[in-house]
Length: 217
Ligand SMILES: [Zn+2]
Image (tube, rainbow, N blue to C red):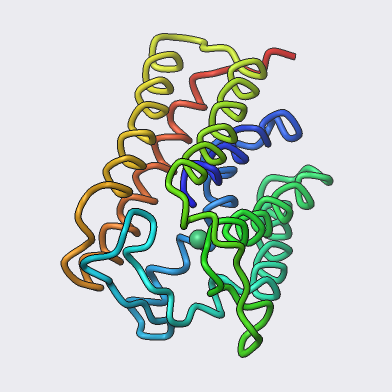
């Protein structure tokens, strides 16, 4: 899942208007930020299936530290605690922690059974990925609702606030379609490099556009 996570991050602006959209992106995608790092370090493992159908081009052999439920609960609390120490705000801790953990829940709906509850546990996943229209319908709906909520909660202060945000929203859709229907990455190395640089770019972009928008309330 990709833009579904982003949709939840956008919607979270309603619950925590002071947090930057960049922070919310980072929290919702935390598992997918750690994952390429752990792949690069050889701690987690993936196999590329060159002839895989859309959404099924990667076999997640093992990713207990970025994608088990237990790991994400711990990461979520750490994320919230660090945020509170840096930026303050009491209940933001729990919203950010919930966003980090929400990644597991959304992935659980879409992935085939490859998500552990804790390192070494049995693996779970409802397999919505087996249906391309089903996956795109669910993810697309979460994304659109998230966009609507974010656009109601914030107002562009200037042209950057308007156009940088709309360009970001459109780019996310393009990336989603390209990664779904494009050919799989040529190597695991190319995969983690693209995943990590893409996540960094999108998080910075979200932070930048959000800085040029004000809360409406
Ligand atoms: Zn993930």
